[in-house]
Image 1 (cartoon, protein in one colour):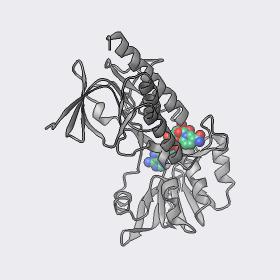
Image 2 (tube, rainbow, N blue to C red):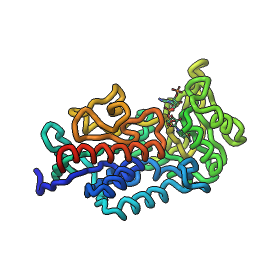
Image 3 (cartoon, rainbow, N blue to C red):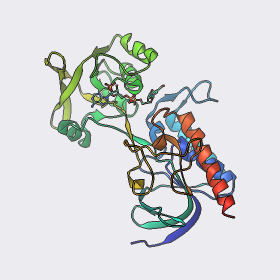
Length: 316
Ligand code: NDP
């Protein structure tokens, strides 16, 4: 049951580059936005080390620093940034109902969904066991690599993220073994070449994880199978990193918002509009192709401008 109802012109859900950019534009347009940061304040960039490709930072900036700067910029213009996450929505009426942690109820004229995406795991029982035990399974090399300094690690995946993370780990760990399920990388050529040319990264192609091995809740190795020869190998390691892609954080919007088969929100071409009037989307929640901080920021701007035009047309 709600203990209070708050009415807002513009509610922004999520605190990555998309959410904060929407907040900067919405607050400068006098929409008095409220932004809920969600489960991971700052979003995925807080798990990234150096961001070198965001325009305007010629010498790079760390992901966490960039998010602090974006939050400050949004707050400077009056955005009310709050901790907490949305647990339920009802987009069936004239105004949009949103519940924060099943308690607080908000009635918003416009909603900007910028909830991003989360890392995928393999789904093996052993992987989940050591993940929950905090014993050596991670989906973020940049966050957790430090704990495996001078130790051996294994990383699964063959995309740009896996290559970037393997390379990052190679600077910290004594050895990194990369498990690639096909005989080719999905990553861009330059990233794959970088990994191939790093002496302490060993790449095992056609290799899939069978089991994460451990003792006393701590990872001690990985058993993997060559899917061509069926040969099993046991690779000693203390850290097991998973870098196999992401899933959009859109589940709670499913009853109301159109999505593709993988859960990415479908927006009207060339705008941030969803199928529900007054509800807009920005960032990775609707983007499985680009997924960059700069594209997320760009769509955050679009969402705020679309929300502003929507409110103006309604006479707000
Ligand atoms: P991708 O979807 O590109 O790659 C996922 C990788 O994981 C694939 O190689 C896939 O294998 C593998 N995989 C998926 N499921 C399994 C499984 N169950 N077991 C083993 N392997 C599995 O995700 P990324 O996160 O790497 O990248 C997402 C997007 O972000 C891409 O567009 C990428 O270019 C971009 N990106 C860009 C960066 C940069 O430019 N600096 C850095 C990081 C990401 P398979 O190939 O066989 O399908």
